Image (cartoon, rainbow, N blue to C red; front, side):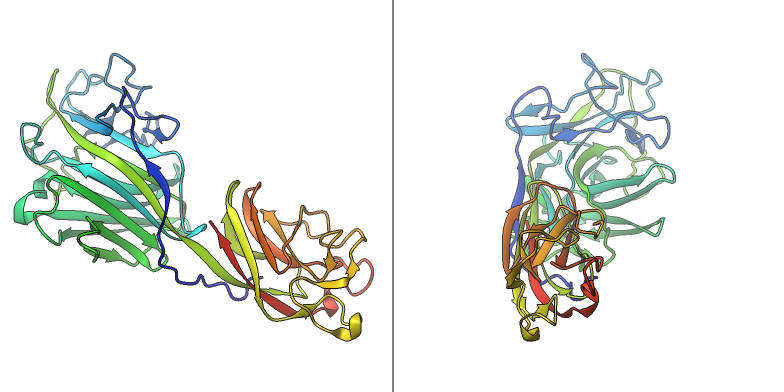
Length: 409
């Protein structure tokens, strides 16, 4: 049981992922993916737009997202070569295969430097949508997903009339709720030229920024927060008439060759504020879940802070000790949390659920631990003792607790 686990407030953003692009016929498909056709809840069609991908649109069809001058070109065309009836557009979407979320970090930020087709010969007409968003499909049937949207409509992306659609989907207890708000941009006209779009996501809320280095105040905040890990996604598409704010009846699909516009992405980044927790571990309880999820490659730091405990009040005149345990007894009996370590030492385990009989792949924490995870799962902590009471009272007569800080980065 975790008894004091509220994450400490930290304000230092760390650049976790820096996605750049190399010139070529397509983005790096080991990093990025595009939705493909499916029979039910088809993810590669929304609004009036099919999404290009190398499987459904193989060469010579335009199924790729080319990189020109080190920028990904998300093309949107009035002609869809897979639709002979000319009733759909062909758009583009790329999303990271990796996901990030609040289980592992105190805060997560998704950011991209983009150029919208606002002016010049390549300007798009009203009725198109360019977006940066976070997404995680939880269930196809019923259709449930967590999502945070930063959506820009060409109906409102110029001059003093600039508006942004902020949208959050939150899945809770098997149901999905939507929190949608259209807001004006803070310093119009702010969307022309090269702009940096940023979404910050924490337990306190979701914040939206445009060019945060110049405009450090978010232009909107939403307090309803998704909980699952999500991918960073960018797309360019045409909505249907049901979305009146973004729809424009003057924009219609056409026969080949059609007209094409580009939503340019120069780079994308994932920032995090690492999570540090104060966790109190009780001496008289078996494995206790810290609530932190780790994956292979994560760095784990655990440091003793305060409080004392004992795994045996009848040893050393009942004196209490810290997370290093009692150095006078080195455990050598099966059934203890960890053989070869001090009785009463703090131990750790990574996995979904410890067995709790001494057979778990435990590691020594003691007063200080710094290591790299080789496993995936929850991080658990426990005193080194006779877990099942094979040799006496076991955990039942233990006294005290220890408090440690836990940081996963």
